[in-house]
Image (cartoon, rainbow, N blue to C red; front, side):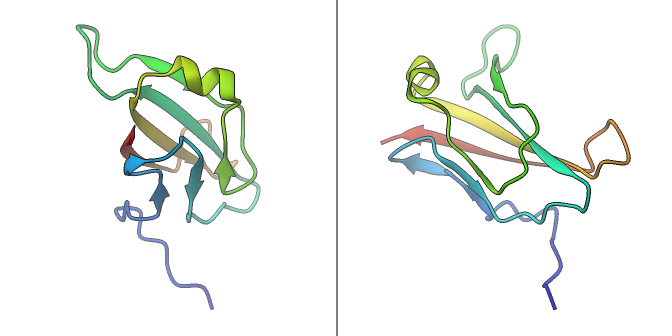
Length: 103
């Protein structure tokens, strides 16, 4: 049987901290009929808060890599969020986040 997924446990997200690239992976169970959405924001907030850099279309996998041109346009320090949708509501069932920066 699968171990339970603890929504407060952020250790399942990569990249986290110093990283060689912005290739995203997560060990979060995809709900039946559900999907993930990944949001990337600036790590260092400006006057309006953390600027949204990217929001993905629905992802049906446990990884996502931006195309090189997209990633090059991002700052070296990002905050990213993984939204988990269960398919029954327009609101996310869970949200996980991490900070990462290029080494």
